[in-house]
Length: 316
Image (cartoon, rainbow, N blue to C red; front, side, top):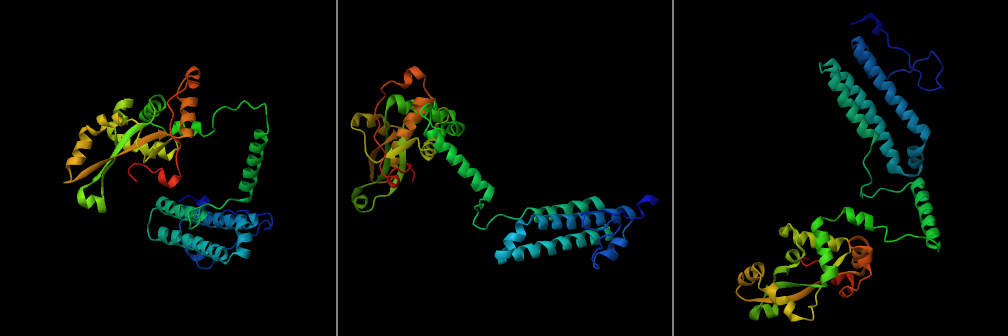
């Protein structure tokens, strides 16, 4: 080992520490550090001084200290973090003296210190907004209200449309176009029937339709997931009412999946339902999925959605 590493250089961590006066290591750590080889001694000492500097810097910032004054839990957490930081440095020294490679010991200590620097969030899983965040939110709210009073504003389309486009699959766009141009689509539920079904009817297969085939979806097996996503985005809703024209259901009820569900139980009955665009979904389609010249066309009318608890997905 080179002779230039025999002495640990002085490190000035704060202007309040007089020049030439070195910060002392705790008694439990100092003897172990002195026993290390020159390079390891420098590394261990640097780790300790860096940790001490980080704790002092955090204290000067005053954020955790200010919360600790009024929050006993934060005060206990602050004391625990300081104790754990000192324990990490002690573990580093013991690891090196026991033969653990220096790089591995430093990496392990760094990970432990990183966990202390980034404590877990609140137990409820919701981040508490800071004062800066609240000020920013109020500023954005004020700007939004200011824009609402601007009679010369040229804003077109809902601001959520851009985000919605990022969350749609190509097949889902095909389904929306079918609903826009073709109107509400028929769907059926297969339930148990017969004498027992009159008392307690069980759902066998929900939301069966031809909406995937009629819209030209490439992945027909994903149609239930597509419909659930469109419902989640507020673009479609599932009505418990049937369409006015009963002929709309004849082709649907003759499909193999519907027949298989009917034959899977001794007594079965088919309940007719329908799938509609919401007003928000219709405006989204007019704004994003068709040309401007077509957007003003009169498309088939959709029923208005009822209360949220009744507009459930077909498999709810």
